[in-house]
Amino acid sequence: MCNPRRVRVEATREVVEAWELELERRASASDSVVSELEITHPFGGTLGPRTREVFERALSTAEGWRTENDSHLRDLTDGQVRYVPATGELVVTARLEDVATAEGQASAQLRGSVSDRTTGQGEGRYYTDGFGGRTREVAEREAQSAAEADALRRARELTGRLRARADQESAAAARQAESRVQQEADADARARLAEESERVRAELDARNRERIGRLGQDGLRAVNGVLATAYRRALLDFARQRGATGIREDESEGGIDIEFELEL
Image 1 (cartoon, one colour):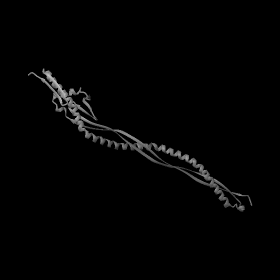
Image 2: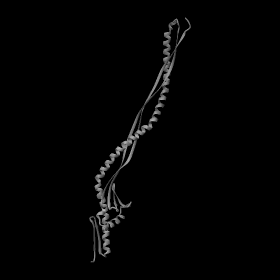
Image 3: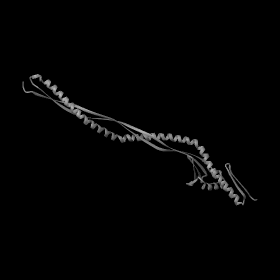
C-alpha cells in the first residue's frame, strides 16, 4: 500500500429561468354626434310689400322669438325655425344630438429567459495498487457523484437569484411595452368610435327625415301666428287712421274677427 492519490472532478449545470406574461390595455373614446336637416320656404315672397313690412316688424318683438345675425329665430322641440328678412326665407332645422362611445383594446405576449451556469466540485481517493478496492475508477465515480451533487446544490441556490432577475426583466419589458400597447388600444378605440359615430349619425339622420315635415308645420304655425297678429295690427291701424267707429275684436280658437264701421 502506498499513499492515496486524489481525483478531482467538476460538474457544470446550466440553469434557465423563463418568463412569460400577457400585457393587456383597454381604452374608451366618446364624441358628440349631431344631425341637422333643413327645409326652406319662400315665406316672405308670398306676402305683399306692406304686409311683409308689418309682419317683419311684428316678428322682431314677438314673444318666443329672438334676433341674431340679422335673422329672427324661435326654438322648436329638437329644432329651430329661422326667418331671414333679407331673403324672405323661412328655414326650419331639425336637429338631434347624441353621444357615440366605443371601447378598444390591445394586448401583447411578452416572453424571455435568463440563464447562468454553476460548477460543482467533487473529490475521490484511490490507491495505485487498488488497496481496499480503492481503484481509480471507484474514485472517479465518487468524485463525479460528489461534483454533480455540489452542482445541483449550487444550481438550486442560483435558481432563486435567476428568478429575481427574471421578475426584474419581465417588469422592465412590461414597462417598455406598456406605452405602445396603450397607444394601440387608443387607436383601436378611435377606429371603433368612427364606425359607431357613423352608425349613430345614420340613425339620427333617419329620425330627422321622419320628423322634418312635422317640424316644418310647427315652423309655419309659429310664423302664421305672428302673421295673424301683423294682419290684425295692420287692419286696426287702417281702421283707426280712417276714423272707423264700433271697432270690435273677437278672438277664438278658429281665428280673430274684427268689425268696424267706416263712413264713406
